Length: 326
Length: 142
Image (cartoon, rainbow over all chains, first blue to last red; front, side):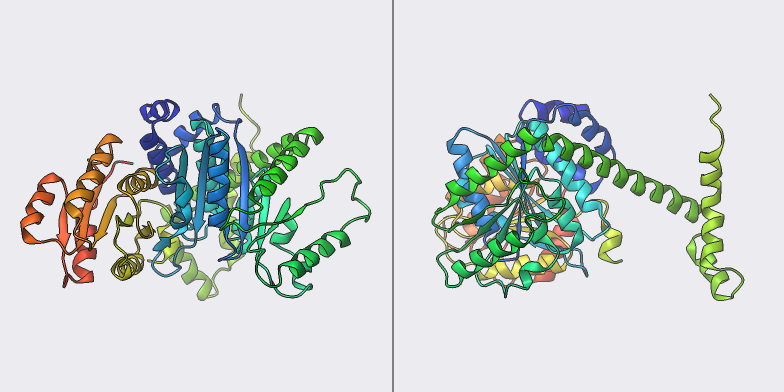
């Protein structure tokens, strides 16, 4: 098992690919692998890129990755696409835009499907980032359509979050809505050569302006810049990357990178504890004859959901409440 | 079983690849869609990929199945290059390589001898291909 870890740390692409599969599949032993890898992490900058379908995320990521490579840095990309709620199948098409990095193995590009929605996706993504970081990638980019809370949670795990906004994204009230616009550390108005780009830039700047000067905001706070890009031709890509680096510098200077990291690990612990406890109780439920028997009682008005829950959870609570023996 | 219940565990991952100077991707699209509906995870390469790009994708994505769609007649040159690339990265043993397209009978035996598992020509049915993949996808210990 730790052969795989050794091979990964030695720089074998196949081992890295296999580790990410294990992480995705939650196959036996993946936890030990991630535990071992954790010690070797901490050197990668993690950049999240999100925006609506067709905003140009993959094209921009391709250009950004190629530019990092020109500078001698190595890159890992995790591109998340939705999976079918009916069959669980998926077509993962982000790779198509990877033209600038064709044949360059030092850009490790991995497509992931959302595979249902049990919240496991954010754990899997975090663990995949761990693998890429331990492998020695200098930059890790997470690319995802920012649809739904789940994906917002994922992209928030990045050090720097870039939100791509296509021109003509609705009126200025859309900009006030809660959601992905709030989590942006920088905005890129992509396809800036199209009609409506100027207006979108203006609306974004106004939206940002409304948030300033209120109680709780500080003059030293980071102000998300709005950058115009034409990813297809590469225009604005340098500016985009400079803004990413500015934000990373800001995180370091303000001590926020560490604070972010701490809250990320806290969230990770919570998610794992929740998932594991849930599994334990599911197993307990199965051992007691499955949920249907309880449902029968409730339907027959012999019991109710709260009583049933109490019955199942009480032993766990007693166990944790008991004074420790050692 | 709903997709949610399938969240954990192995899912068949396929790379559908178009290689070389061949601009016909309707078939590859139709197959990608059919595989998706069969519950597979499909990575589509896009058009005009070089053999080394296909290898890069197959290795990085850690696919169980590599489907090469080729209608240009260059299969005798391009397919062996892909197989060699997989070998180089230690990926040939547990990747099921299938070829779809126009391959003359005389060439089929050669490709099959090199390590291609099956060749599907015009008229092959979707169900047949899906069934084949389900049956032959490598059973990995992972």
